[in-house]
Length: 387
Image (cartoon, rainbow, N blue to C red; front, top):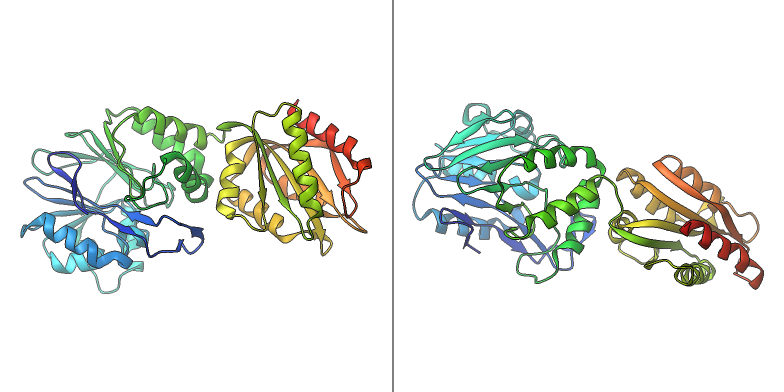
């Protein structure tokens, strides 16, 4: 797919509907886009390649866009293989073309490709460096850990276009017609969520630029209402809740804990919670559960005890939250155990390893199945959580 972004900038990326798991872990029911661009000027510039999975399509787009011309530069914003797999092929096909990247990226690229002399064919750009290709002047801004250490973004000062690397990306192929925020949120918290401080640093740099178009490495080109997208990124990267409400996540072995979790959700709604979302951790897309934990202002964890610990879907969920730097939330706990309840203790200890987590008291303990005698404690927990 080739389309015009501006009079001199073309999209030459590809959609991948054959992929089932992005990064071998994230379910992508609507595929994935590997975005690549070309700036047509006195010196032609390619901005990133694509995943080798779709190499044939990318090469067709590039060859069509070049129409027999030779590129002068290939800008590498991010060395991860879904964007850089075709670098070596491009260097062999265009021997006069030079790589433009951060020093860290130039250092990393030989790890992916053998027998390529990157040092003699690369331009290592520092923070704020510029490259003039004719009518276009490109300014380079480093964005380490958004979400690898070698990342940079490029601002085309001529057309006011920000090539934002993985920032502002989303899951889903471009041909899929779907709202941006849902899959962009799931993408952000699972791909970049750990690095909120670094994203904030990048947003401050972007705020100083007269950006009119954002071209990410995944997802659609953003051309309107940029304040909306930047505003969501600001909220997400500050670890602030986006939605006032309660996320109820449960891990139930034989169904009893699930019954209690759904009853507690009813109590929360009756007590005035503006929104309550309930997820079965044994059956959900874990990446969506991580997304919802960050999205909502409050969370309830309900889990069965298991092997003197906590049922494994809950342990896995909490492990993922910690790895993504989950913080600044109010969390209530409900545990279930038939003879020696241990889930609450383990959930509490895992939450205490995270930043600024307020654990709401009292924790509720049920024995095997929820009974009428458990309802007052559950009601109290719902009310305490919403105070």
